[in-house]
Structures are given as C-alpha cells and as structure tokens.
Amino acid sequence: MYKYYLTERGPGPFCQPKECSSTKDFNEKKYVEEIGCKAWGYAKYENPLTEKEISDYELVEAKEEIRLPFSEKGITDCTDCCKCCSEFECPANETRCQ
Image 1: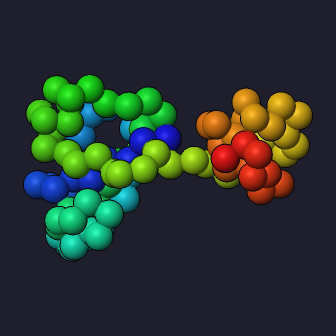
Image 2: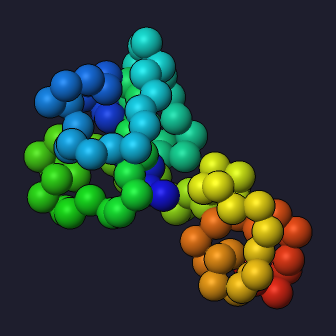
C-alpha cells in the first residue's frame, strides 16, 4: 500500500488520481512529521503512482510503504510466510520475514 499526502487541497473528486483505496481528510491543513510539511489529508493506493501523477496533483509521497495487517486482506493464516510478509504485516510477527 502506498500513501500520498495532499499538500494543496483536501481529498475529493479530481483532487487526487482515481482508483485510490482510501482517503483521510484532516479538515484543516496540519503539519505531518512524516513528510516535514503541512497537508490537508492523504490518499492510499494499491500500486505506486507515476512521477507525473505525483507532480500533477501536487502530492508528497510518504516515506515508507504501508504494510497492511493480514486481516484487512482476508488472510487468517500464513502458509507461505516469506512471500506474504513482503506485502503484508505478519500476524505471527515472524522476524525472518521482515
């Protein structure tokens, strides 16, 4: 999962590229330590955005990729831990996979 902060306007129609999986509106422009500047909110995406999309929408990419808990993807047990943990947060907290 990839997170991009909206620094010039809050999330809404035509304010960020389509097909985001979720958005968060801060309802005001506030300082975000992760990016070192103020933002109105953020949008999350399954795949990374292009440099053109980031530039066109005046976004700032979060410094770290977000790893979802298994439960958010409908996975209850890890049978191929190293494969799964590269994409999701390991439910067993397996250090060998991180």
